[in-house]
Length: 140
Ligand code: CMP
Image 1 (tube, protein in one colour):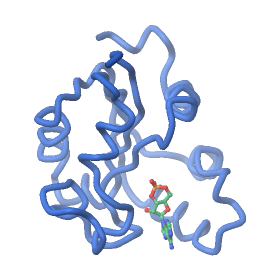
Image 2 (cartoon, rainbow, N blue to C red; image 1 turned 180 degrees about the vertical axis):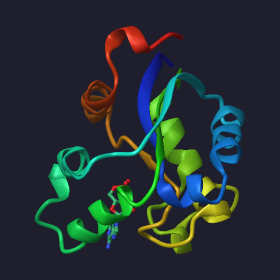
Image 3 (cartoon, helix red, strand yellow; image 1 turned 90 degrees about the horizontal axis):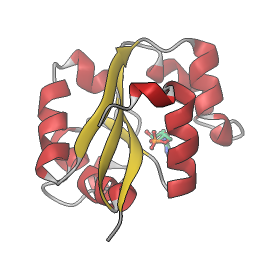
Image 4 (cartoon, rainbow, N blue to C red; image 1 turned 135 degrees about the vertical axis):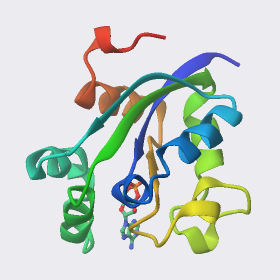
């Protein structure tokens, strides 16, 4: 399988609980390599732009409020079939539905405070990576 890249966010519920390392270890143990990483506090404009695809959903306002409630860690992950590999280790969006051993089953608090975001396609991964990183920030 080809080595590809995907985009990940460690969300405010995880940074607040000092779980950046625990989440990253689970990603690395799943065969993903962190090739770019930065801790940022998103602005409202940044979060609204990032989640624009959800702007008509009833949870959009709360989602944006949550994502700017504290720092996040944006990361680029590399590995064989990175997008699917990351989604597999993240688990289902709602931690109640997530398989045992996944990040959300082990660490998430709720469907909103669900610890991690991961791109849902290779196309969106490229868009999301470019939203937060310049090409020269991906250092392998
Ligand atoms: P994420 O992968 O970051 O993409 C959109 C986010 O919306 C999702 O994870 C959830 O954390 C959040 N969200 C909040 N409420 C809901 C909901 N009812 N259905 C789906 N996603 C939700």
